[in-house]
View 1 (cartoon, rainbow, N blue to C red):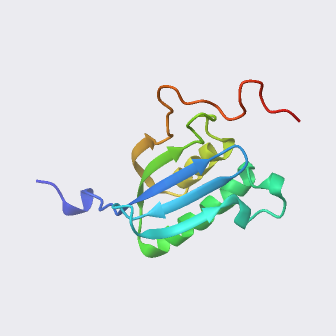
View 2 (view 1 turned 90 degrees about the horizontal axis):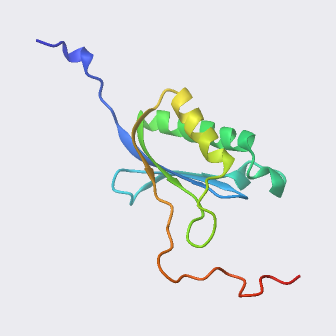
Length: 135
């Protein structure tokens, strides 16, 4: 019927991207989520605090993570995107999209794509009080 070479064997891992307003984190785990394969953040490459959130910095850490995963033999990811969440912003930082684009460009396949941003429920109050933060 089919040749065996038609079906490609995928080795999956979890890719958790936390893209906040001021920094970006990449965490690669096995499928159970207990064993960490690789963990990088924007501060590991940046020389200034303002560079931690940049797209170029995110590209550098994504390339470093993909090289490590290729050496191990991983060729596919289940991606989990996370923003600040709760009573804070539920929008991803710009670097989150750059990381995802870089991973795909490096030849990795994407299994599932999830949003794991925490959502506040019921009467959760924002920090700062009724009159706001006074400077």
